[in-house]
Image (cartoon, rainbow, N blue to C red; front, side, top):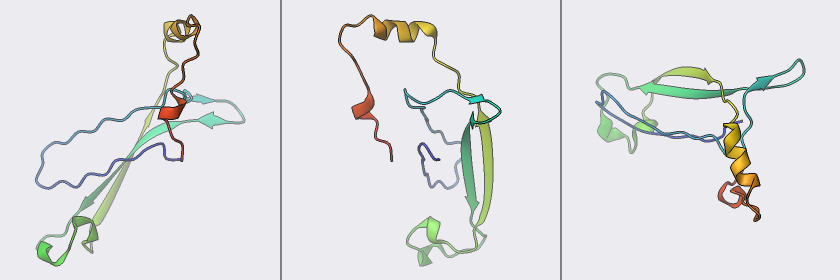
Length: 104
């Protein structure tokens, strides 16, 4: 399952950046003999062949003959600090971020 994705077309850059987030109600990483939840960042890099006439293409992603490299970086998601949950239980009114998060 993909939680979210980000696409960026760059050329001649030495460095780029991105920001990712884990949903407030997202489970932490865990594993049992019967089930496991694992999180990972997946990167795909495409390179364009040399001497390609870029004017022939409407968008860089349409260029034929590109090479693809994929890198999957497993990460461990820990539970939030215990003080975070306690702060929400002291409120008389229930507070939820559910309307702000749309699952697809």
